[in-house]
Every structure is written in C-alpha cells, then in structure tokens.
Image (cartoon, rainbow, N blue to C red; front, side, top):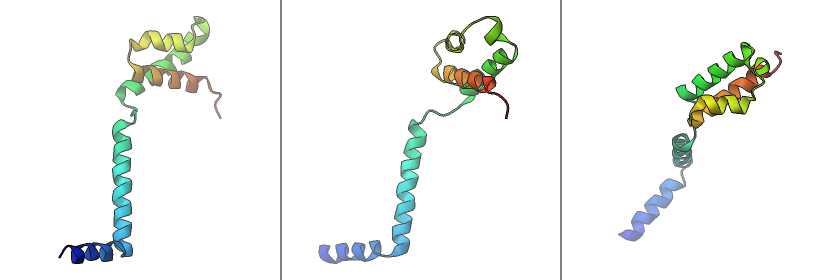
Length: 98
C-alpha cells in the first residue's frame, strides 16, 4: 500500500498545474518570511523623514553647521527606525530638484 501512495504523489507532482501551484506556495512562504524579518518603513521612519526634511528646508543644515548624522542621532533618542528615516529625509531634501 505504501508503494502505491508514493506513486500517486509522483503522478501529482508531475502535473504542470501542481508544479505551478507549489512554486507559488514556495514563493509566498519565502515572501512572507522576508516581510516578517525586513525592517519596514513605519510611522516612526516617516516621522524622522519629515522632521529632517523640515530641518533642511528651514536652513538648519547650513545655519547651524550641524551634520546630518549628528542631528538625526540627537533627535532619534535611540530609535533606529527614526534615525534611518531622518537620514533618508535629510539626504533627499539636499538633492537638487530634477
């Protein structure tokens, strides 16, 4: 009986639609795993991003002579996501408009 069960599985796996379904399932599982471990850009990130853009737009970067990393580190208070958003926002604000 065990032999016929394994033969049945082999027959199913050889079908193209089963292979396609298994491929989709595998990629969905891998994508789900990445989403769980990836650092998402949440409200803390965007808060830092906007704060830095305002700081640059208000002339804080040139007026105070403070570096972007120092400004972001001081504002972040240990929140790494906020600091990354702050750095991205400040650098984006300094880029020339296209």
